[in-house]
Image 1 (cartoon, rainbow, N blue to C red):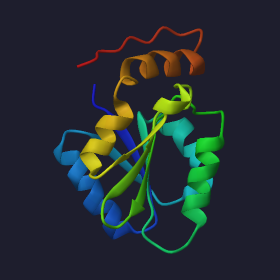
Image 2 (image 1 turned 120 degrees about the vertical axis):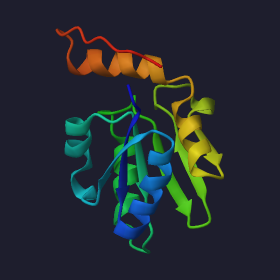
Image 3 (image 1 turned 90 degrees about the vertical axis):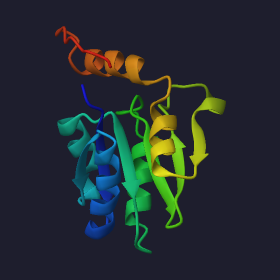
Length: 143
């Protein structure tokens, strides 16, 4: 099963370029530019990772990131936020992890994805599906 990433951006050109880099690594990347309804989008898509990729000086996407990270709805989903155009990424692992293990900095996109998903993939898949569908048994194949 491929890892599914939801890339939320405010510049279509940059989002396409970034999604191509991730797709070359075999990741399934879905892009969204409507960051006002992030919770609804995440609930529908059920990504393994949410990637915020702002490229404008507008603070709306930063506010959307802060609201998402502070929400208790999707604490199991790791989040990446691009801090600058020169490839600095803030990685927030699942917010149920120990406080000193929650965040980190990566200097490239692939390392940020690896850091975000490290030690969370199997427990995330299991807990996320059980919390959304407690009465259903959903099998997964981890590669």
